[in-house]
Length: 486
Image (cartoon, rainbow, N blue to C red; front, side):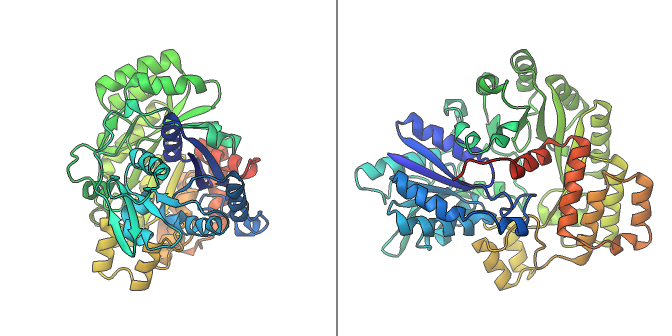
């Protein structure tokens, strides 16, 4: 069978695993790609430049028609959902193959997705086994089966959502991700090799997609499944001469002492390349920082989000300010740079909270404060709370559930002016002297700085160039570099 994967604007590790899984079962796969260099939801979103881009949706539809796959698969998160629907609409106008939608937006609300005529089936949760079963069912003309766990169908107006299969526990048994399918679309993707040492997150924050899985998998107690060190090294070995760095995308990089000791020894012996990873304040110690440095870690991304009780109540998590300061001091002492994720517009947070938080970041001077607006996503407790408490209008709720207007760098309709001003200050913190930022924060001078989308993107770019921030540099390389699309 021939399976077409359709995606836009970035590398997708999930699709790479799905592709290699299908190939191992004897099927043929191909990626059809919309570069979305200036039109997606990344830092390079610039409408004026996007206007001059080709109509990649039409190019994708015609390329798929020429290849004539047996199944077309779309992976959608909330911000890309409407794009995926429009692409599927155009593809179906030229090629009759059934379409299957997967991804976190689909997992959150499979019935709503199935209500769309562009969608013939959905996969909720882990997709390898379900997608393979769907592909195999095409051979016998039994595509809409009731016995494919994790899959859903619409039959005669009725929605059939099959129960989930158990988590894949032996993640070492999965084939290595099919990196080539994205690398052939843009060489910029190989600038920083994306890898995960396991699956799952130990936390269930109320705003995050990880809060969905306890509901989808009620009988699974342990969401985190760790790959063996040997399996991780086996994946990296063929690529050690290709990427400039390795980026570990685990929600929280493993802190288990036995695993980390083995990883340090094997990584230094066989790979010995700089890497970056994600860490969490509550799973941090001085020893952890030391060991990361020994392994070759040069940069960490720290999920702070909020240091206030009001914000913590909304998000289901709160970073202790004292712990954050201690963490920053330790990373400074080991020469590991760090950026920090922070969320603005949290209900209950005051102007004093915003200023206090900005002072904290100013004293630490991370290479970047990666600021996000509070965003609501289908299926999360955060969205349900906002609806019950009247923080979202019915129209706004509908737009969230349909993925309309959900982009990273656009101001949500319910955003406050104060948060917009403060975002610009947070952008300036890595660039300006502490005394200048303190002056801006005093006597409400920060409120005089208007939010400007272009200035926001420019400040992030300058930060990247000055601090050697490889994540933003990768975005720039991708936006400006050549692509082989669709």
